[in-house]
Length: 146
Image 1 (cartoon, rainbow, N blue to C red):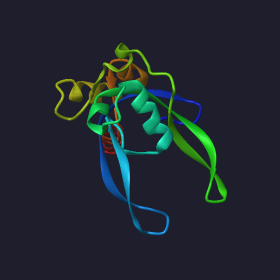
Image 2 (image 1 turned 30 degrees about the horizontal axis):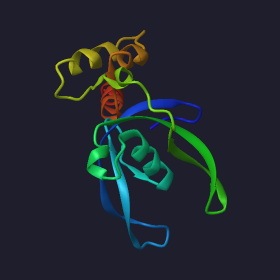
Image 3 (image 1 turned 45 degrees about the vertical axis):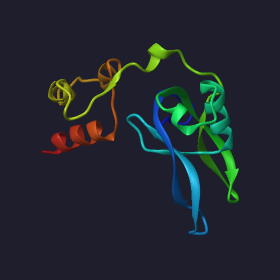
Image 4 (image 1 turned 90 degrees about the vertical axis):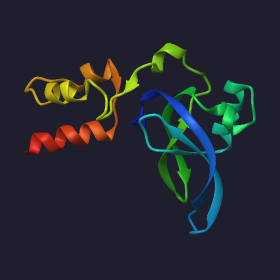
């Protein structure tokens, strides 16, 4: 997910209705987006409106593989100021998220890990070619600690 003041282009792999516990501990039906390389995101009404606009459809299955830009906005919720992840009203161009997710099964995984274990490595060089997630950074941290 993006950090404050950062925008991140991501692909929504799929959207489905799931039971999610609300602040009172009760189950609510929510639209949940599975985002390539990131944790799932509960979609509020505004995010759903953006996806309807981008896809031209109100059907969740038509929202699969939709490219969006996420950003963080400060909002007041539950009596305090918190970060909320939002979908930008402007859809990014298709080539901005064509990088593949670097997974342990990917042929470049070991080479990327080896590079990151070098003294002067820069993760931006990996990110220029691949999408990475916590799996990659956790593995680099684990191997550095060995």
